[in-house]
Image 1 (spheres, rainbow, N blue to C red):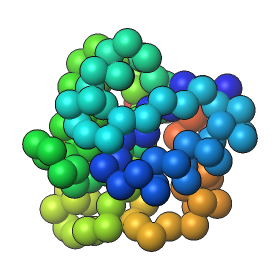
Image 2: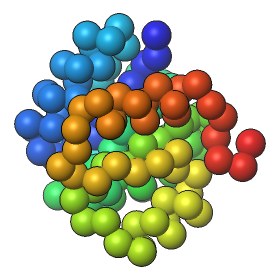
Image 3: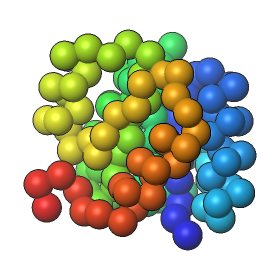
Image 4: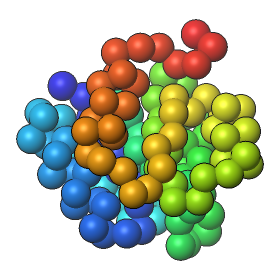
Length: 125
């Protein structure tokens, strides 16, 4: 299965997503901030990043994705957000984000996005 990094400053989402993906057989690491996500991502080298759009520390999950993609251009990213807007859609589309899922979400919805992201190429490939 895949290596998945989850970055979210809400611990309930980290635990909820992580537990589900581990049960599905994925190797999972988590981070509670953007900076931690970048540090973990450099050593963990995930196949898939699931990141919250808005993080409490210095910014956005999209920044984590952009930094990690410099090291791994094949990295697939799913953004999760409670603040869906045209800005989120535009930034996601221009940043090679596979998709975004709105909070609150059903785990089946996110799990389907994970399977699809891992089974297909990056946008534009």
